[in-house]
Image (cartoon, rainbow, N blue to C red):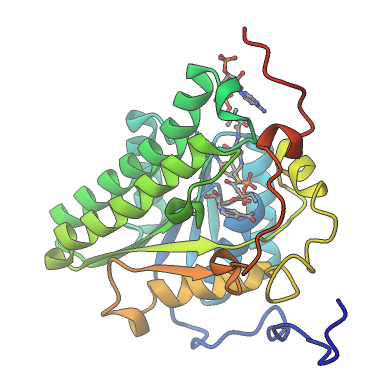
Length: 297
Ligand code: HXC
Ligand code: NAP
């Protein structure tokens, strides 16, 4: 960068372990985090645990569940893990039954689990499309439905946070399946917020910008590796710190956000609004991914 003003980017956040919310904000309160054993889900679960919540981690793979349990135990939080594929409504019902038996009806659901891999649209098989939409959109709805039905029957207030992505608004070249599914999640958030607010259930969205972490799938890491310097490519001149997303999630679920519903909060240092007067040269998705020409089946 040759700007003589020496842009310094957005400041670093306060250190991990600090919070703007009172330490007992979620005492006596259980939080279900899908995909809470890895990456952003684990970071979100950790911030809830620091504020006194009991954590329920729900996902498919035992090694991920174990990682999540260890992270919460290290903080000194209460935690349980439940094996659950969010594409399967029966598994979801069983997961909530187990969580309710251990901690009582969880008051917050964080729909964080999703599926994604980079692939040019013309290369994508019908099953690849179905798999991503099934996990990211259908799974989010099935989880929200089970959670809300239990609260409607109990007459209790609650909060849902659906984790999205900014290509819900812009489209996501190279990620047609995930972008379409996340657009569905954003729209679903708005519908459910209106349907369930009268019963005391708030539904909001939370969109991370670029938050690299070690659990990212090899495909996603490979795709990011082709971006030469991730910090320099962000208006903030840095990527997100995991705790920043956790703080946003805990705020949205807290009583201090009691009048916020149907909103999707973007935590990305303005990256998704980035536009240039002169756009960079177009590079096709195939070139970006290092793929040769499309030759058909
Ligand atoms: C093309 C692929 C593919 C790939 C899978 N498929 N990976 N196609 N490129 N890299 C195809 C398969 O060939 C198959 O289609 C279909 O997808 C289903 O694959 P399965 O392996 O049978 O599916 P399953 O075991 O259900 O696993 C789901 C998965 C897997 C999505 C494929 O990667 C997964 O479990 N992911 C969970 C974690 C994850 O995705 N995290 C990313 C969230 S991050 P055929 O036709 O062969 O049967 C995120 C951040 C984005 O969203 C922001 C980045 C900047
Ligand atoms: P990640 O580490 O790959 O996490 C995905 C999680 O989803 C895993 O823990 C996985 O657990 C779980 N999962 C996947 N399929 C599931 C299924 N069928 N049933 C239950 N759980 C399932 O990804 P991440 O980067 O933390 O992403 C978390 C969320 O942030 C996602 O919604 C993602 O789209 C969003 N996001 C992330 C970024 C980023 O920069 N990291 C940017 C934009 C949006 P199992 O494998 O154990 O099932």
